[in-house]
Amino acid sequence: MNHFSFKEFIALISVFFFAAFITYGSRSMRLYSNEAIKVSEPVDLYLYERTGLAELTELLDSLEVEYDKDELNWAGQTLRWRVYSPGRYHIDESISYSDFFSKLARGLQDPVRVTILPGIDMDRLSRNLSLQLRADSLSFREIFNDSSSVAVELGLTAEELFSRMLPNTYEHFWTSEPEQIIRRVHREFNSAVSDNFSQEIEANSLNLDEIITLASIVEWEARDNEEKPRISGLYLNRLDRGMMLQADPTVVYALGERRRLLFADYELDHPYNTYQFRGLPPGPITNPALSSIRAVLFPEQHDYLYMVATPEGSHRFSRTFQEHQAASEEWRRWLREQVRIGRERELEESQ
Image 1 (cartoon, rainbow, N blue to C red):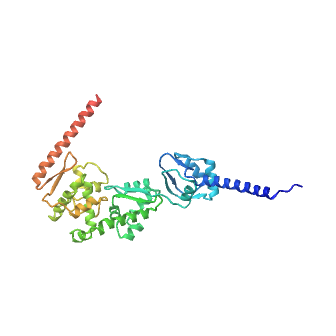
Image 2 (cartoon, one colour):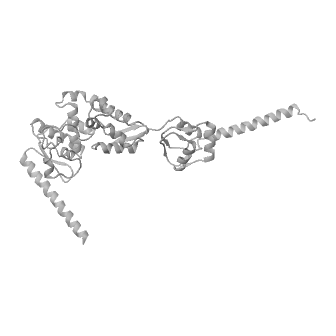
Image 3 (cartoon, helix red, strand yellow):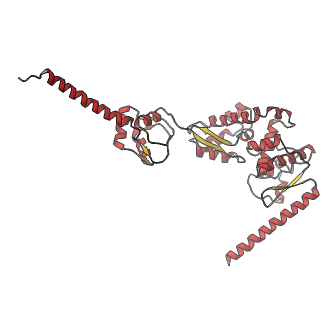
């Protein structure tokens, strides 16, 4: 019977450990190599719910990602990261299996930039938020209700809560609940407006709700930020003199649709129609930008009481009704000329 010598035994053991070391090293290299999953340009991976390994590979196949499917499955099983949390995961460079699976399984998602635009309505804001986040538009729309838990908690009406959706770009996690988003934006409003301008608000003849209401009208009226303090000063002059505000945006809001106003529209019996009811409307008509709120807190000091649109998209301001009538007639002549030009163009195209 052959027997191994001690040297042969040592040699066999050495070969065994060397092979094991090579195998372990190879496995480790494959698991921890930063070139395991490659991207030529940044991609976003969205997981709508808890996702298994098989579903994950299907999602990766739909992206511009280079990887080995069999090796990915082997790595997931080996590392025991087999279920992945919902979220948005940004991959901007090649990554190892270990880092990739750890990030998804632990739910270390990357935030998204959420933009809230000024001068919109509740429905449009809800739609925009749903396009940028996982929650649907109805979930957001339900919050802008007088009886919603958020509105009740904050002691605000639906219009007041919506008007405090301060236009800006915020970072949120894609899976954030709608209530979290709205509360976060409301806190930003308090910080940027209520706290930052506390002394100016305290000294103002209007309370905060009235300031926001007037700012919402200025927001809708002005195309140019530089014109906002002048428009604000004009409306404040009318309020100080006990005149009707006569702000066209309030009529548009009362009608419920944005279009050119007709003479009959100004007769609409609606509490928001400032051609029929004196003073500010019952609440804000949109969410004003910070520049519009500042315009109300720091209005331009002047004697203007009237304004009319100009072809350039700005306004012509007047101190007397006679001046305003002349400016309005110029505006109407310009509109009639545009209608005439449009009809001639349609006639030429039809021939």
